[in-house]
Image (cartoon, rainbow, N blue to C red; front, side, top):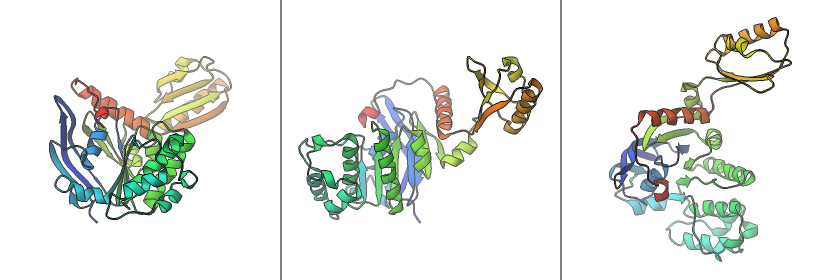
Length: 320
C-alpha cells in the first residue's frame, strides 16, 4: 500500500536563514505520525509546505498520491488541517462555522455529525467568544473534518490547554486512527507523542536527526537507565560512587534518596544490594527507569546543536 505522505529532500529558506534543510520522511496509511523538535526547528514550515501554505524552494512532496506542488487544490480536497490557532469571527457559532467551511468542499460532512463527534452539541449555537479554550480547540478539529479527509494535519493542537482538555483531545486523536484516518501532528509534549504515535521524526535546525517508533528510538538511544532509591539510613557518597557502573550520582540533603545512571543495570543493582547489606542499611524504595522519549529527544537535539555551526535564528515558527 503506497505511503500517504512522501517528503523527499525538502528545502525552504527565509532570506539568509535556511529553515528546512533536506528533510525526508514518509507516513504510511493509518499511522499517527509525530513531528517533534525544538522551537524554530522547521516543523511548522514543513507542515505548511505540505498543505500548500508555503512554496518550497526545492524537494518532492506527495500527499494522498498527488504531487502536492503541482496539484495543491486537489490535495486540499483530501486533507484536513488544524493549525496552532484558528481565527474566526467572535460571534460565529460552531454550527455556522461548520456549515461555512463545508461549503468550500465538493464532499462535506453534516454539521450535526461533527458537533456530536467532537462533543459540541451543547455549544452548537453559542457565540465563539463564549467557548472555553478546549471547546475552541475541539471546534478547530471539527473544522478539519468537514470534508471527510483521508489525512489530517494537526499543528501543536494541545498547546495551552489544561490537562482535562488535553486528555479529551488525545482521545479524539486516537479515535481518528480508529476511524481509518492518517494523522500527522506536531507537538512539544513528548509524553503525548510517546503515548499516541506509531512513529515519530525528530527534526532539529532544519534537519532530520531520527525517525522510528518511540519504542525503537528509546531502545537505540545512547541514554542510560536512571536508578532512584531510598534507604533507611544515609550511606556516604564515596561508597555509592564506588559501586560498579554508577555515574551522574545525585543525593538529596538527607542522604536518604539517591539517584544515578548506569549502563549495566543488573551488575549495578547487585553492587547496590551488596553495599546496603554490608552497611546494615535497609532498602526502602527502588525504581529503575529506562530512557523515555523525552530523554532521547533531549540527547539528540543537544548533540545536533553541538555539532552544528552557530546560525542566526529567526522566528521560523513565527512564519507558521
